[in-house]
Image (cartoon, rainbow, N blue to C red; front, side, top):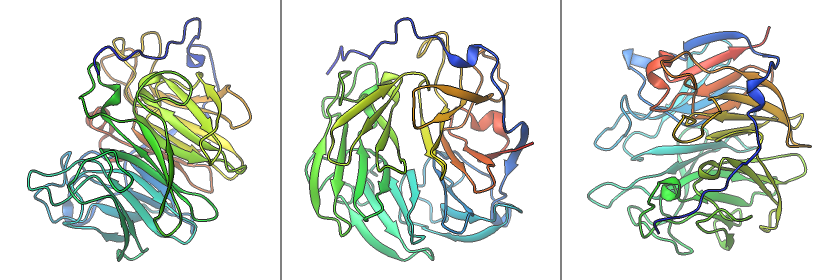
Length: 340
């Protein structure tokens, strides 16, 4: 599918190019030490559990867990950064999206297969202690059917337990592979297929890598359409409600209890998104408007380097999950941005 058109933002100026307040100016790099002297690899997923503590994963010291039995999933005390729980060793190739539901269960998307075809392209639901409770998709089998995924990016659950999966990572490529998809898939709380929507493209309701999901208090589903540099908003039946363009090329999104929206941009560069820079843009779910901005790490480029995933604890502290682009500048897998 070469020549897929990218959604354009003609006349849209980066809100972060003007002075904006930074509500979290204290930067703590290398927050959340791993046990046994382990060194962080890359990550892209973080969330907050119902008890207010921080969940994240590590790609086993590198950028993949293929061939490793190290635990990739961790729970950290939000005050001390100490590990409170860990699990998942040998079960996941490439953790990508992470979601903690209202009961404390941990959902992880496994975004890549292995050469043996035994793992990957799945969504796995764990209990808070690491017991596997559910699997969606066929292990190691990429596909675009009702029971398969092709590089699933993220997962979220609605208040009634319905499950939403953002599927398809390669659509943002300059020349997407022939089997690339770009869709949102909905399941019942017990994993039965309900419906799906979206395809590769730039029109409303189409995606070029639906990279992350969040839900506001009204039950609206926010999708980070990264390759198109926009947020798309849907109802839970897939009706397109709005497209927002002020939050940049978004890798991760988080909506807090007050319906404040946090969007982290890890990929902007002069080639991918000229005139913009990475960082965390903060606004309200009421409108397409950026109210404040947390700057990126310093780097050699004017666009900076920022994490790929994002979470915000009940005290308003922000956590950036450092992906392969920002990890060298971050000094660890998680960066904590504390309030004043």
